[in-house]
Length: 275
Image 1 (cartoon, rainbow, N blue to C red):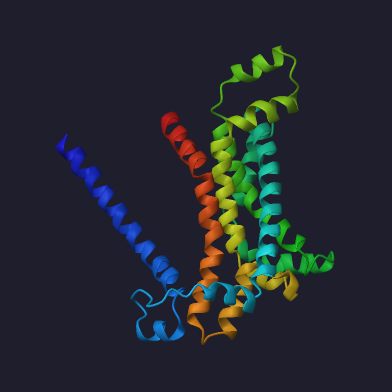
Image 2 (spheres, rainbow, N blue to C red):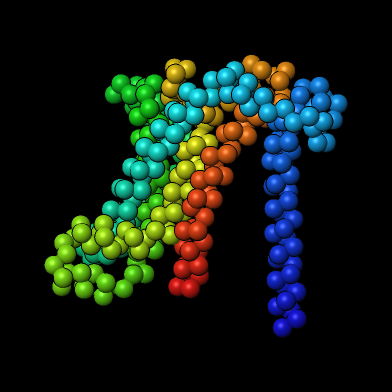
């Protein structure tokens, strides 16, 4: 009993230390975003003498974050919708139906998880150029969707495989069709796993830099990571404005995670119970 208590205490302390290590840089960035340049130069680690909220308005204007935010929201939302929709449909058929090549198809998606994404950057650039999609939002949406189908199917199919067959049999007895069962029964039951894959896709798509750098050259189509990189490269004198811009880019990630946290925890709990 004491051994178990000591083990739990050690794990909690370790997690607390890791949390502090991760929170300190973010907290330092947020506090620095409210300082003036002079205040930051004289006291980079302390609290600001005067909380300067104008840094956010200035950073938003100077860095043109409005355009970059909209592009990131559009690309991220379109990629998530396509990935989750295609992944959920594929997972449903792979997990709930028996057919000859099911194992091969599932194995093919698993192999897709092992392919280094950025190793395909040059072929994708050539492909997008040949089909005329270079410098369009689709040049990002399509690769983001394709590369995240594997992990999405892996998570959703594993979750759906644990559902009892009785649910679908009862729905069939009531006259429900295949797609009605999927949309009205299977998909709502999969919400915890959906929250997990949506968070994974959102974080990657929102932060992705290299594909956006290579496939997008027009300033009006650049996403937020590209805009922040350009802003940091040209406005190296204004550290506090850079911190304000980075803080604004971080807020959607935190807000999105908090909005999906309940479903994510339910999915983790369900997985623990099944295991």
